[in-house]
Image (cartoon, rainbow, N blue to C red; front, top):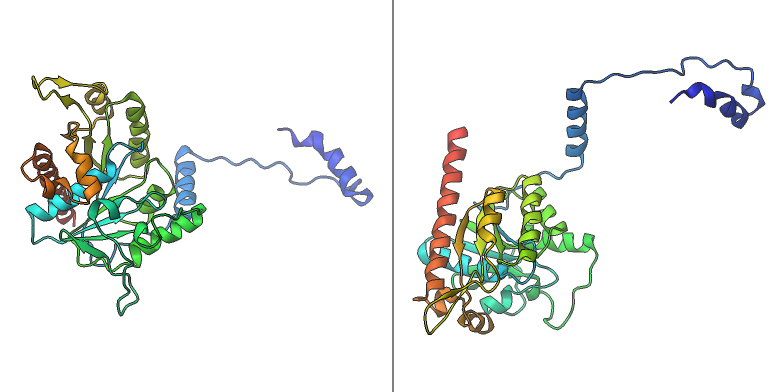
Length: 316
């Protein structure tokens, strides 16, 4: 832009006392390399980000996420937490329901009642099936809708994480809400997340939104453990044929994103009964294929955490 053409107009706007003033030093040219601009941008971006602080007494944090709702994310989180406790009884496992607007963990874990405060003024999580649980559904009536703006949600999430007596925990499983919103951003920026499980179903609509969720975690630098596919197929009780009623595109989508489908679950009507009764499949149907797959999933998560710990020791 040639600033000289605007000087007469600037003089008129400033008044008569400036009309005879000659401009001095109005031409400034700055030159920066690409590396200078990159460093400057990084400093600006880092300036407003909160410092990641671990939860006292919590060794590992695993997110269970999905881009789309209704894909069985909470079912996965609940059964994963219970399966981890079953296969490693000496491990302390926690389950955080981070879905402030639609909490489902109290129903699926059969927990209710207002939590108590301890001597340190921290909320004591409720315990069932050997798993420590906390959810907004325990703090508000099930019939009342939570109608909050973003800032209030973030404050509630802070209380559910840093104002709860979680420790000692070997692993905290966090059931996140659908989408790619403030909750995921706040968790990733404030907590040292060890990894995320991405849950999806085979429908094209679900897979498209799953891609957005994967892109979000990549931008937030949250490692993705792998993909969990729910409702992959239904088995005919008469002939045993697999029917891919929702399509069969998950494998191709996972390959395109460079992810592994670490577990795939078929449609099973018994799962609905488990949800409604508040008894996870790992306990209600211990001999079922679903229970076996949840145990396998838990083993894979434990192995992932162990590998992360070994890598951390090696780099120190």
